[in-house]
Each structure stands twice: as C-alpha cells, then as structure tokens.
Image 1 (cartoon, rainbow over the protein chains, first blue to last red):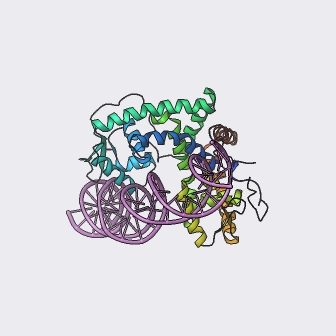
Image 2 (tube, helix red, strand yellow):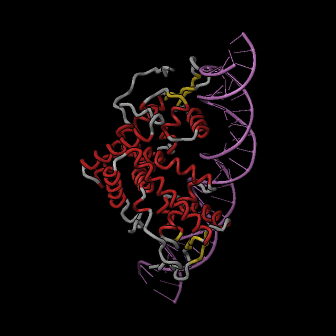
Image 3 (tube, rainbow over the protein chains, first blue to last red):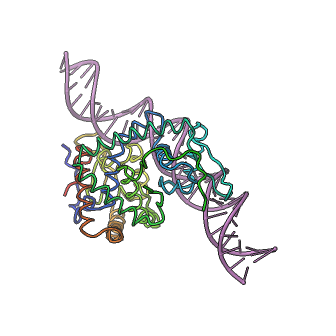
Length: 162
Length: 162
DNA sequence: CTTAAAAAAATGCATATTCATATTTTTCTT
DNA sequence: AAGAAAAATATGAATATGCATTTTTTTAAG
C-alpha cells in the first residue's frame, strides 16, 4: 500500500537478516511472547516469571546468583523480589555464613504458581517448536544455544546445572 | 562456598537448561550485552540502537512497522522516536497516502551514528561467534533462527527482506 | 452516502527501571 | 591485627515503560 516514500536508496547490504544478535533477540521475543501473555493473565509479570522459573529450578539462590541467571540488573531484581515477597510468593533470609548475602526461596504459594507456570511453559515450548521446526532441528537448536551459553557465559551463567 | 541452605530437595527435572525460551533469552543477552555497553558509551540506549539498526536496514518505516521489527510496544516506540527526533537522529513525516501513519527516517547525523554502530556490531558479532562456535555452527545457528522467525513470525516480522 | 468498525499514533498516569551511591560485611595486604 | 579493597544488597531520585484511552483517519457495511 504505502510506498514508504524513501529519499535515499538502501545503503549497503541488508544487515539485520544476517545479524546473529538480531536473530536471537527476535526469535527469543517471538518464542516467548504468547507465553508471557498467559503469565500476565495469571497475574505474573515477565520479570516475576523469570524469578519463579529460576527458583523452581534451583531454590534458595542469592540475589546476585539470581540476577545473573535471570539476566536482570541487580537493583531491579531486588525490587522485583521485594514485590514478590510482599505478595507472599517468595521469602528472603540473610545468609548466616556470609551475612552480606540474601537468599531467596519460593513460598508454598509461590511454588504452586511456579509449578503451574512451568507446566504451561513446557506445553507452550512443545507447541512452539512443533510450529516451526522438526524435532531434530529443535534439538539441534537447543544444543547450539547451550554451547553458546556455556562458552560465552563462562562463569556468568554457572547455574545451568543438569 | 555457601551451601544455599536448601529446605526442600529439588522438585523434578531441571527445567531451564532444556527450555528453549530460556536458552534463547540467555544466549541473546550474552551475545548482545557487551555491544550494548559499547553503544551506551556512544550515548545510544538499547532501544535507540534497535531503531537505528532497523532504519539503517530499511529507512522510512512507519511507527507500527518499526515497532514490530524492533519488538517494542507501540507507545514506547513513539516516545523513543520522539527523543531521537529531539536529538536530531531521526525525522518523522505523516504519510500523505494514509494520514494515520507516521513514517520515520534517519537524519544525516542519525545515519552517521547508525553506520558507525552497524560496523561495530558486525565486528562484535564476528568476535562473538568466533569465541564460541565454529563458522559452520554459526551459519547453522543463524539458519535455524531464521527458520524460526519466518515460521513463527508469519506476518509479524515481514521486514526480514534480503 | 452515512454510520459503524478498524487501524495508527499519541498521551495521561500509575508503576517500574536505571544509575549512582550508601551501607554492611567479608577478604586481602602488609 | 588494622586498614584498604572488594563484594552483596539496598535505596534515592531521575527517567522510562506499560496500559488504557483518546484522537484522527481510513475502511467496511448496510
């Protein structure tokens, strides 16, 4: 319809379609978006979902560990956790061995919500993969991403424990 | 060091390490983070960088098109663009064919910044891939992501034009 | 042709996020 | 063992973001 009224012609090569970081961000957004809508409907924001998922995988992490795993800036995570604490979804305890640290656990209620969302996330993942890749391709993609994370996140994302 | 003071044992299977959406988000963050630091040092936020990159690839898109391509909520994009307009990095023109739409272009200055950042992004991408994958794996990963985007983003990310 | 519905962008306002910095505790140096 | 440096959280204040809604324009229906 609209002709975009361009002034200048295209500069050089198309950039985005071959830029790994763009492809990752776009695929990530597409893959997660509709699940995030489900979570929102359940009253859980994206940031909160990330915390629930991380804790459901490994409960009792410290704020800093959690921040790394959930890819959140520390002070942001502190406040996300604070809200979740107020709603009774997590509890915090200062670590006795190192009293600088604060560890975070799911409460019973939080764990329930997490279990439910994790189940839905698994279902959503299966649907999503089926909608765009063969099972083998899905496995291959995961393997490649895992390799990227292990190599690039050396020390940063130690929490991918199997 | 710290023993994480767990109360309950682990629930079930580890979840995150095999959850595609987590792998994508994590890899995406790791891949982009250090470039985002570079951009910030150049006075460009992540959101602004996305706009610059999208426009440098295809100038004169409408706000809605840009929002889809840059994966930004529309009202957020409107304000990001407004700031970029104030700084003289982009200009907006209401479309004559369809006066609801507003198209966005890079200014000379904006295009200069975009060119510079795109060049750095390409260099950063090459370094990043080399740091964690073989060239063949890098290509394979891009191919898989492209497939995901084409299939899952049917109609949503039409702007991946080569 | 007139009115209803849809589409695009902007905006008000409540909330969330960021950045820098303060605070507390631990680790390292000498 | 004392003091400096580092590490982990928290917090104040400026800014950005999200959601619902409004405004303007276009498209569809009757």
